[in-house]
Image 1 (tube, rainbow, N blue to C red):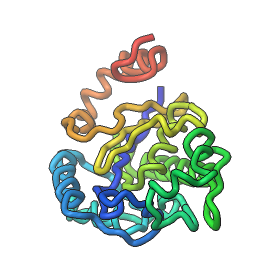
Image 2: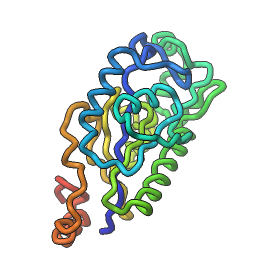
Image 3: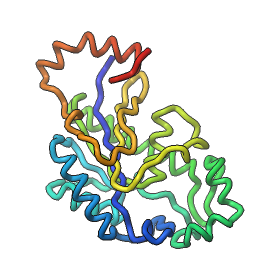
Image 4: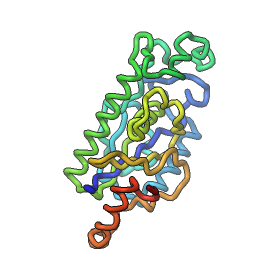
Length: 237
């Protein structure tokens, strides 16, 4: 099976809105002290990886996360990774929003949710998935199938991308968790996407370093056979 680049999805660190229980949306909220520490810590985990590209949502909390985690990187801004447009819900306490008639729809049938003066969750999911798939093809073409790249985005955006990778309906995406500063790993292939890691907040990422090319060529026939039948590393038929 043809190999392709590996995507690391990084959620930004904790913000003042996360700490206060508010819905930040696209407001320019910044990392709080805990979020800055989380960003620095995830940087230690990422430093062993030769990242072929770093891409970010344009919002300040993502850019701050990358400044602390990967200070030498020059992230490309990708509008498709911006937070969902929550419209008039932005900036309001979640406790208050939980009393709105739209809240059960967001929680149980998010594919039908359209935020007042904002974006639909279905539109958010579609543009986010399109963005990462486009970047993945670009990174593979420019850096080869062993490349590893990173995209920094937001909780609902990452959950929507994971739901697509798992082949589950958007209405199930609220079952997925993406904590602040967590790393989620997806490997896209012509056959199907593989979810390699989900919501990883402390694991060693060194295993994602691409193997030397010579060793990769020697193991190609076995690895390709396993992937075609079982679906990926660690999977069983």
